Image 1: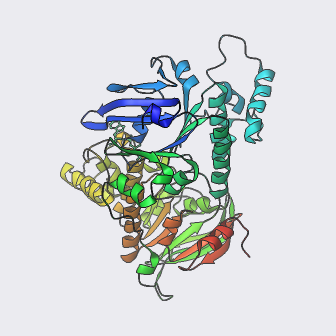
Image 2: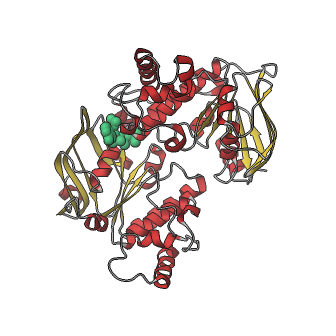
Image 3: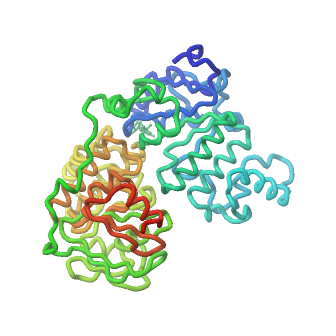
Length: 502
Ligand SMILES: Nc1ncnc2c1ncn2[C@@H]1O[C@H](COP(=O)(O)OP(=O)(O)OP(=O)(O)O)[C@@H](O)[C@H]1O
């Protein structure tokens, strides 16, 4: 689409951008043109180059070649951070808010200039800035007390307050529950009505149809197409992303044989209580996949984290194969054969400086050889098979995971969780940040693991993730509120999650 055809000014344009990281070509002569006032989606498989483009559009990195312009003017020099901030802001999935600083300080960070800070003024202005967003918080409180939803709104308010009219949202819905996503979309539409332009990155393609007018697809570091959203069907969009026709098929629990009542119980939770949940009792049989759904405040994450020892329960019992697991001990959970994909892959899931092979082998180092003495060939073979089995885009098993795209890091976490052949697998949002095609293969792995006799707990509200489950347990306000069999319907499930089921 050229400027004249678009019939308006371009809020942002990147042209002929190439960016290499050593041998990896992250962007290969790509471009994007974002019209003033539109919401423009950028989609592509994991490793396609989306985040790299974001870092170039926000001035965090210079391209090897190519140009960026905002509202028809060349982008500022990289050193002119203030200049970039006036043009563009990005709300990342991971916060750029400083948790120890107050909300007010975060809003005015980098802007206190040389004048003496007037605290009462800063507080008043902060409250005024947040008011239209409905963020009702004490701005003197540390930002660490914000919910994910509030934190994102504070970041958007901060961007708008410095005059940015172009905002990039990089997977903004990944950590939000259903009602929070709807609220975010309402705000985006309202802001768009006031003339704000958005670039929106998401692996949830239905969201693109809900909030965007234009979509650009990248594949293997190249620009594939740009089209109006209403002229591109979902199947065509997926084909453009994958480069092959055929669509998607997420595995369903109905394709697996029924796990009978007689199957041995692998995991037992007996009257388990802890931070944010009470009296949770559950039995997961060998070969059974159980979904744990609920809103962000339902306690589902806390239950899962308690199972794999990250949190200590206040009372109750966890057993694997009838043997008690020591409460609050990740090491003991691992010893009993509990594998996990944690909620926060950066803090709990990966050692960013280590290679794919080392991360994948982390939970089985003891089996491969004494610490630090794992034969390189064996390590390479663990890494190589992780890359092949989990569809990881990387230059090789020795590549540090810090260099991988977000979705590919998530796949390494999954490989690591499964490397020890767990008896019980606890997966928290296992497909978060993973592209539609890779999601299919990760859920295929869950299906295969269940067929080999492991019990799997999948904590997620993603309907595709729950399709692979034999049962879905819905939590509400810290308690088990509903249980569905394989025949759950979307409306009944959503009603139960929102606490409005009969
Ligand atoms: N700092 C880096 N060093 C080396 N390679 C990198 C670095 N950052 C990104 N890459 C590589 O560049 C390619 C593009 O990565 P990018 O993060 O832009 O993908 P993405 O489309 O955002 O993927 P995802 O959907 O998983 O977030 C990937 O192959 C990635 O491994």
